[in-house]
Length: 513
Image (cartoon, rainbow, N blue to C red; front, side):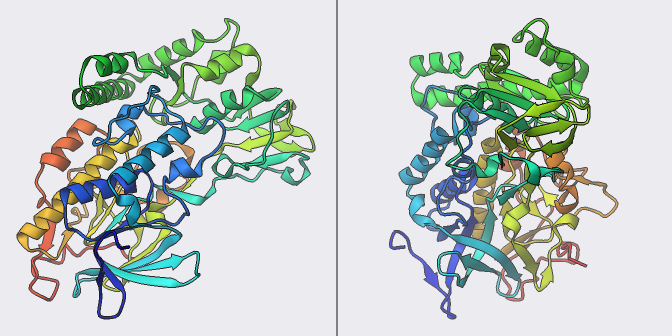
């Protein structure tokens, strides 16, 4: 704690300008931006787990990797220097921790600290944050002017595992990728991976290298697209140009490319569906049933595309070391899986790559002036704040591009907002809710199972700006880096009662009934 100054309230608890919740990719990036753009701000990072890195420390299943290129998943302020554009999990973890160490924000992290609740007081213009210390078992309290959640949107303590009838009869091991056992041995064993999403298509080729056989058992197919593991244009530009020029050029090249693919998927879904299936067929044996196993019932980008580096999934399928089965599970048996078709799949190990459980703001309970916040009834503002909730921001990355592109923009917006409040002398800011007549729509527009299961617990967005969540990086640059800070935002300019610029509409907060 000697690395930075901390303030102590009269009650003996610590007081900070900003509390960042989460020390993963987003939280470390937010801290680096805050330190650079808001010098002098007192801040701390609270991390529930024992290590930094978030997703990239938690997920340790074989082959874990990014499905975004590292020139856009990497931070804007720290170029990605390694050879692979599609990087493995350990490489990404090293990158995050190196950035934290370089900027000194690793010294600001407090581990084993899970935020359980946060209470806003307008009269004090402060959040009181209650933190569970997992090491001591004690409940700690601190206060802050601004609360910044960088917790992602899924539960770290449990993945989604549907109930399989007959699971107790199965004689092998059933594992979930989110909690991969360190002692699991799959060499020369039969493995069934249940699922068809990004985790499943990553696991299958990684496991197939040592297993006797791997079967990807899917209820329905996903769109899968091969990407080169190495970016040839990036390699050339890095060879010809200084890093300070090459990195942003490659970053923007990849932004433009991913934006083009996404827009084409949305505007010409039939064309893209044909192109994607044709791409799959070109990498598989001529007699492979692409129509059954790689022809989804939905349009491209209704759910995320699954990217595979250098077509490693297709190589595993072509070699015969892996296969795909599309069907419904009837039940598990003592030695495998029985399908509703009557077919059976032998298995020594079953991997339930069945998805995530979503959770906003790490599951913390929030109150505003004593009123409990109902996240499901709240409306997001610019995809970063919640209407009626003062001095609170959160990070949700893009679903159609790199997470970090949006996380960087969110962090820079928060820094702009904090500096604007200082210049104005404002104690707090509170987004104004949209007119009740403006239609509310789900915050995330994907049809993926993990989104559908959680849509009734997530905030909403409105159909018009600034309550609309963009999935467009160039548009977000204009709004978050260049746009006004006072549009549909009420400020308390510090007359002491916490209400000077706050009308009734600005105070609208969705409360738990």
